Image 1: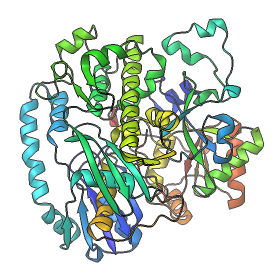
Image 2: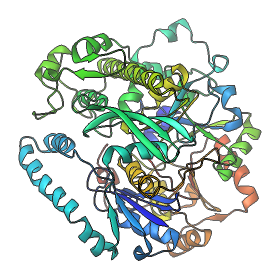
Image 3: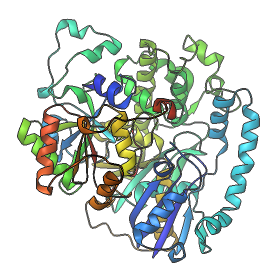
Image 4: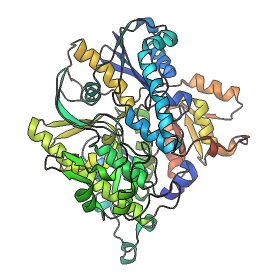
Length: 418
Length: 172
């Protein structure tokens, strides 16, 4: 049985192929089109997945589409940031396009893939949680998804058991940890939606000088980790930017201009929002543990890529072990959508036997020696052929001599690249 | 090494830390971490015993200046707060990579190397041999090992492009 999972039209479009419950291929469209965060219909990724399995689109039993119910926000942010002051116009133009593409997805599938079979739109939060739980090495575990920018339920949690996922509670837009982090990403002069990990990398250079200010002024945080943001400081619901004049006044200055010099102030701001994020996540993780009594925790969503807070959960949190879906964004959604059809919709059994369930993240194309050599020959590229047994030592020697070596081996990885 | 790699290979901001790949069997010797972290999604502190004591002068360094101090036996992957974003590699998860790390360990006594994704700032990770070769030639990478073939930068024909590729990829 083959199920194709697709996510598209939003941020990082991707495709994933599940064969009898096992993920056998997955890739993001950007890798083929060479356009970072490409969100067009992932026709190249789909073609690759089908080729990997040696099947045609008509051999698919189901296509599952990862649905994004709350497109509006990110579009707002993106178009505002890019086209101020024509933002409203571009937003209004983008919206019908997306709606149109969703409505006509059936037509797109027919046109691009000649596929006319079953098409399923699993419930959004379920697919998100599914990407965290089903591929995990746990038969039963608590689940926490903390979305990045722009989705309706921003944080949700529940329990996964065998082939079932039961979501118990959620925090809703606009009270979002991802948005708080993105607001500071914007304010410190980085790109929303991709610069968050730079803020994380910058944090250790700074002092958490503004952490109390964030806790006291920007949010109302409860002991269980739930919170409300003080919306008078944020403009992402109505305005042209992530933060507004009141925010600038509170933090004593305008946002840093992108690509200008990073100062101690940005480092302190980064450290502060990082500290706050860790505290909130840890409170939520503890609360979920209290509510569910589970030994293990699975994580997915943009904030789950914050490896610093993941380390905190593991070291200071109440769980024996945690598992993080490596393709945490929309790409992971394609995986979740496909797996939810297999386990929830079709009620197939889920038995965790191996310790590692996720089949590693090497799910993309690989190139045989023959194909590589062909490429060299047709481009007159000089090369040296090594025997299998000599590769390790030779490369290790180069590294020991402080050479920088590009390593292109086996299948391409699925997930975010930094 | 961190500053050099950032500017010469990745063309990205110099404050951004690099992540280590470490042999699974050695991870707890260097880091306060026992389990597996195959996808670089968990940071852990460098072990106390592997840290280098800073002089009083070095302690006073502020902000980006902190980059200039060697903080541990594995300085290029030790962030200024002594954390590292780990990738553990086992025989099962990636046999060829594991084997190469083991050889490096035997040669140098160190089971840790820098690993960063195969792309430059703003570029999607390379997919085909063509993408990989282009990225190799555009950067100051010294060697490229593709399948069983080794390319030496000094033996490559001159790389010519009629545009500046740095304008090609939008900064992220």
